[in-house]
Image: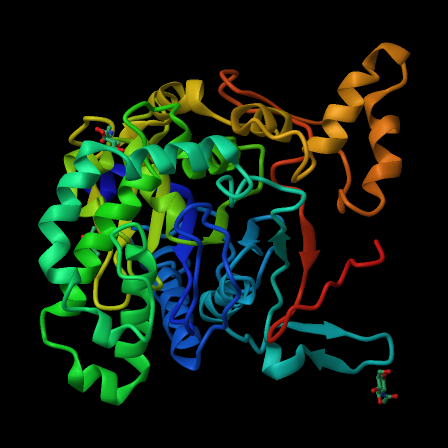
Amino acid sequence: MAASDSTVLGVVILTRHGDRAGFYQSPTTYTATSTAITPLGVQQEFQLGQKLRSLYLNASSPSFIAGVNGTLVNQTQIHVRADAGGELGVIYDSSVALLQGLFPANSNYTTDLANGTVVTGALSGYQYVPIESVEPSNDVSLEGWTSCGAFDSATAAFYNSTAFAQKRSESAAFLSQLPQYLDGRAVTLENMWNIYDFMNVQFIHNAAFAQALPPTFLAQALTLASWHEYGVFTSPQLNGIGNIAGRTILPQILSELAKIADASDPLKLAYQSISYKPFLSLFNMTGAASQNPQLAAIVNYASAMVLEVRQPSSGGEHVIRLNFKNGTGDDFETYNFLGASNDVPLSTLVNHVNPALIDSTTAWCAACNNKQDRGCAALAAAASQASTNVGLHQLISPVGAGFLGAGLTLAVVLAMLGVLAFLGMLTIGRGRVKKSTHSKINAEEKA
Ligand SMILES: *[C@@H]1O[C@H](CO)[C@@H](O)[C@H](O)[C@H]1NC(C)=O
Ligand SMILES: *[C@@H]1O[C@H](CO)[C@@H](O)[C@H](O)[C@H]1NC(C)=O
Ligand SMILES: *[C@@H]1O[C@H](CO)[C@@H](O)[C@H](O)[C@H]1NC(C)=O
């Protein structure tokens, strides 16, 4: 469908963080150690922000978002969330850098004082966009896979599968050549993500390593790591536990798409800064990877997926267009999904993924068989006392003072399509809001 046949009403943007330092995650539980973004990483994200600005906030672009204020930030039109999990500052800082490119300083960001003085915002009118920091301890939406026993079991089953055994024998000769480059890391197919990540980080930042590594090795390692990660973060069944990264982020995405489609809601640009894992599940669950096999892979640093909500000019239902940009060396391309060869009606997407959604902490605790972590202990305790006629909220609140952070909120979001009713218990999408340009400062710590 040509751009002129429909108008963009808004976008849901998902991005992977930029270049970062080394990083290790357990191949069996995917528990991660922290790392740090690099100056290259913030450049990549800043440029991605500029690119998104040129497409969606520039009035002369064919995909300009109808009614958006692209000059001065209207905070009701934009909602930003950043995963504050295992890679900690990397993903949060990536969102800060991206927003600086998306909404650059503007000399019209001023205020008239009573005494006649006109004051311009700091940094020549830089505009601050609130970023919701999504902490895995009180919000499962952006890191559904950690502390999830059922997911760990599925990962173990994948490692024990015949497909894995076959890949192990196919890759044995290649892997046997790697130890000299890996500084003592375990050289097994199970550990393939860590092998690739170490090689990639060294290749970018260590001149001696980059010169010593034979030319095809990095690409070979990436192909194996992509196969490994796609196996771990997808499932043959839409509602399989391997798809948990997609199943937990989708309720938020669908809610945002519905708000954008709802003319009475001001939201126009929803942006989530995440790791590579939800991309794999989402490409699997939407069928995008089966129609476009190159999507069954680890996305590059500073990749972006944009779901455009479009209103066809002929009237009729809102449709979704999926665009993806594979990191810095690539441009946005449109990918077909859900078996279609064109934009997909929003309701078709909603109906397809609906049976697989994990839309509350309660649902997550059940899917993961967890009674102790990430809010599950408090929910289990509350459930066991449910006969006392005391409101659930009152039961949880004293516990929530420390562990539950933002606390238990019973949130009911009725999406405009009427197909969706999300009952969120430990809130998908109610993290703390942090505003900052250069560092993590919790503006609402005392709120
Ligand atoms: C007006 O108020 C601002 C902020 O308090 C102050 O910086 C400025 O000097 C004042 N201007 C005049 C003319 O009093
Ligand atoms: C999702 O991935 C699994 C592998 O984990 C694969 O068997 C299945 O066919 C994929 N589903 C789609 C729709 O591509
Ligand atoms: C993105 O790039 C990686 C290699 O850097 C590749 O494996 C993957 O297939 C690419 N994805 C797409 C959609 O082109």
